[in-house]
Image (cartoon, rainbow, N blue to C red; front, side, top):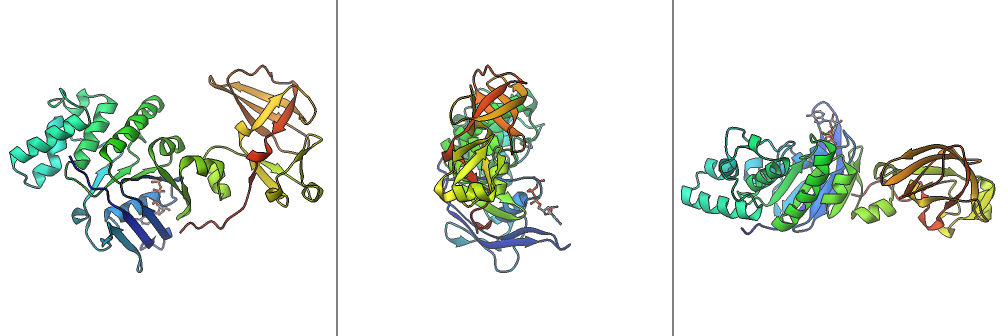
Length: 356
Ligand code: ATP
């Protein structure tokens, strides 16, 4: 089945609801053909509103424009926009079998039975549901249901696919395996897709690029690794992963160092004047006390299977969170050396918060 790879452009779209709520501030976003974008952010940041604008379920405030493959669809109603949707928990029809669920959109469009059969057959092959055609949703695993929902959404050859927190209601273990499967399926379909989630791991696993949203704006957009490593907004650093805040006094800034537990550590040139810096828990290291290490005390040690998490106190700073992968011999109550990788220090404020 040949699916269109549509370029999507959102230009100056904003949404103010009749009660005055400004759910989305003026937003610009370009989604490349075949790209999977995750709209990621906490509850109330405007991600569903942006998704609904793309779907044609909400209208943009004056001046906004949405185009699919250079075609203006701003005033086109939802049913004429050519969007496929996958909802939370998949919303499959429980009384219908796999075939009938997938064929649903084709049936209501009045497609002749022969054509329907051929499209459904092709999709069943594509999402690997062969042999399960006559089963009902209740008889399927979570992964199989997800595949039915995707096949149903793309059966009508939508121009873009919108996924509204499809994994939100699932338990953690199932979620983890299904997000890998979903990522793989979306690549195989090759369709342009927008995935709304407040789950960072899910966004990282599924999307080519993440648009991190905060208070009605996209504050940063980019691939997962660059957003995680180079957040351009304190909110992004805190929302995607965890960070410690490190304080520096004027003298430390003047000396170009970071003072930690009585030690002066080098501070990169670009961060010299920043009085607060951030560092991720995995970029702090604990080791036996030695030259260049700060003295720290372990207040708490939590074994998490693949990693060990520590809360440590060190002179002049608030409690710091440190994470070490694999085995770590250090116990609560002990005094250890603490080291920070200067290349991993992040500024707390850099660029203006608006991406678009
Ligand atoms: P969630 O993850 O909880 O779904 P979200 O990021 O998707 O959150 P939106 O649903 O886009 O957020 O809502 C953004 C803001 O707009 C919220 O403050 C919400 O209360 C408000 N809002 C949404 N729909 C309406 C509406 N129809 N009328 C008034 N306010 C609305």
